[in-house]
Image (tube, rainbow, N blue to C red; front, side):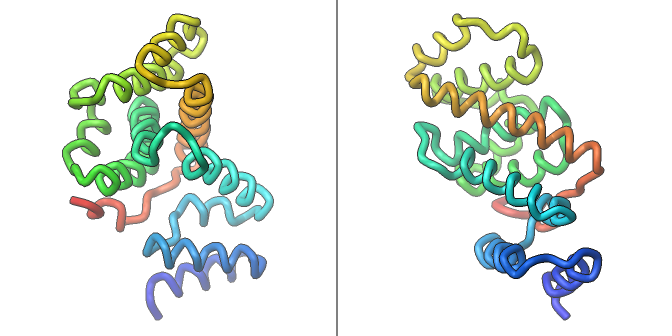
Length: 189
């Protein structure tokens, strides 16, 4: 039996899943080549799984001024500050893949300020960093710095929501000792 079949069987044995969830998991495996452990972790409660995936898909895939790469960059910077092993590994792989630059993925994990970034991306990551480390210190000047770098108010909303979402998911991953899929470690290197 292949590994993905064993995983699906193990999930089904531990907790019955609906046909809808099974189909979603199969779609993930087809598109990603794996079933992310974060989805398996949420499978204990299908309602929570749906809420998580709907929020993730809305923030990371829906229309926005932010590119998919920029969204993944925020995920990595927030996860680096929070030292979230799962998200650093998974989203670091996404940055490497989307940028075509393995070095960018690594430098964002280690110290995003050492990366050679366009001014708009640097402003975006500075805001996400401050929102993660000192949310109570965010003031209008921080939002204005984003506007001055070319971001719209809608984009500021998206940047804030993505940073907030990954602050939450980092804490859940740490609380539950969520481990990244081994495949992420070698992707896009």
